[in-house]
Structures are given as structure tokens and as C-alpha cells.
Image (cartoon, rainbow, N blue to C red; front, side, top):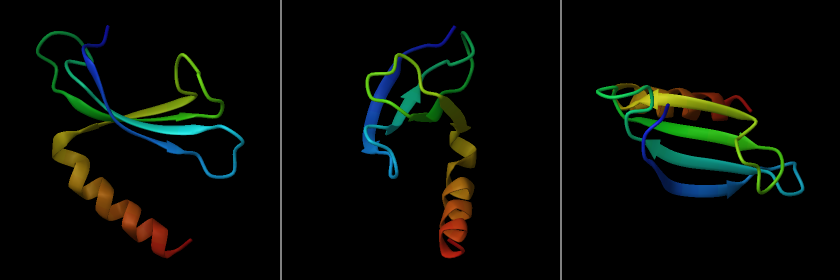
Length: 76
């Protein structure tokens, strides 16, 4: 059972007709007293009830994930 979801941004998923990348925050995603997370969802089609893929990133890991993604981008 997840808590309150707050939309941060929604991006067009490159290479798809109407896919989306959604960035949200989720309060208490794993029940009472669980830490809030940033959530990145990938939907291959618009208006999907739930993303096809989703990852939750705790606040303490966000900076390291951003740095790793920047490194990954350099090799693409």
C-alpha cells in the first residue's frame, strides 16, 4: 500500500509514439513510517493506469544515481 503520490514532471519517451517517463515523489511507499522516495515510471503507451516499469530511489541515493546516469550518458 503506497502513500501520497506527487507529480513532479512528465516527459515524452523517445522512440515511442506516445510513451511517457513520469517523475513523482511517493510518501510512505511501503506503509506507515517508510521513507519517502523519488519514483521514475516508464509507460510505453499514454494513459496507462500503471507504468510498465517503475523504480523507487531513496533520497539518500538520488545524487549518486544522477552522477551514474551522467556517466552512462557519456558512453551513449
